Amino acid sequence: QVQLVESGGDLVQPGGSLRLSCAASGFTLDSYSIGWFRQAPGKEREGLSCVSSSSGQINYADSVKGRFTLSKDSAKNTMYLQMNSLKVEDTAVYYCAATPKTGYYCSPYSADYDSWGQGTQVTVSS
Image (cartoon, rainbow, N blue to C red):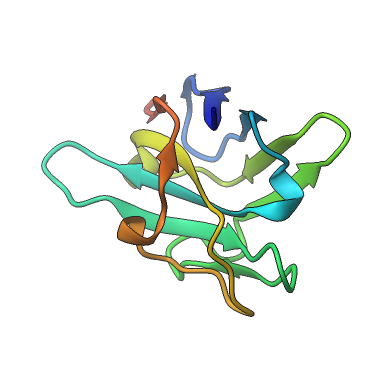
């Protein structure tokens, strides 16, 4: 059974940093494409970053490019999202998602992912 569990969300001041974790079980991260998404109250779910299992290509949304970094610890079967220079507008529930479908480029669209974690709350406020 594919399962994803996010952790690491917290309350942080603007300009601060957080590292979110996405622990996978029931499958090997290396064989799935993984995406990070967020959803703020009243807004649509937004794709932030993803990695293709076939090419290793990593993509970032313009809103987080240069501030967020995706990484993976294969030994722990865990994906990370390092978030720096956080802004108030980064406040949202953050989700990781997985799909066995793959291509050279990973998909930034939530509809293309089959399995989701429960989410972790990130609040950026002074």
